[in-house]
Image (cartoon, rainbow, N blue to C red; front, side, top):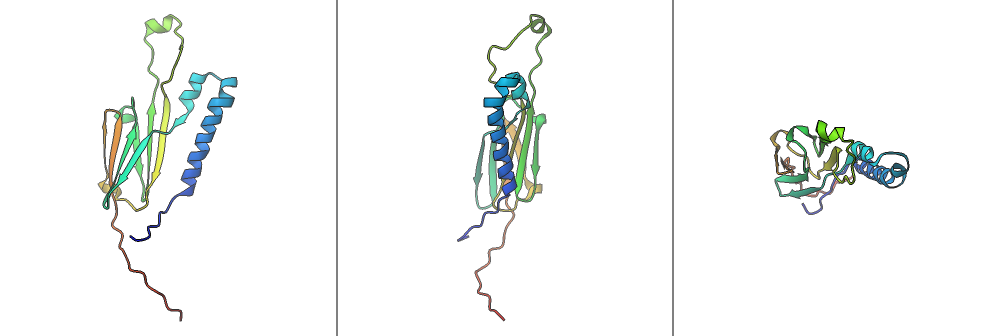
Length: 158
């Protein structure tokens, strides 16, 4: 199309920005003063890295979810957006290590909930979409619905 119009859901973007700002403030200012940093990380909602490509007929979305089990991933598709939710739990320590009063020296692993919402500029075919998870990367192929192109027309006023 000569002039594509991209429809967006502003609430999704503002919610995302709001969540990111809350996470930043909690992690840098409020959290260190009042709580255990490890428990803060467990309660955070993380945004996984994504890559979105498109052709004339489909979208291809890749999401990095290292360490997440396939059964812990949910993909919700709607007419023009997709939400990916995943959860990664902290591994339970073996009894021998727990008895030694084991404490963390450094923990950079991300535990908790991952969530990302992606909006598309064209309606999608929900029923024909396919997902594959391999080596920590979720790949989703989503066909586009065909939208009729119409020629511009001048409307006469009656």
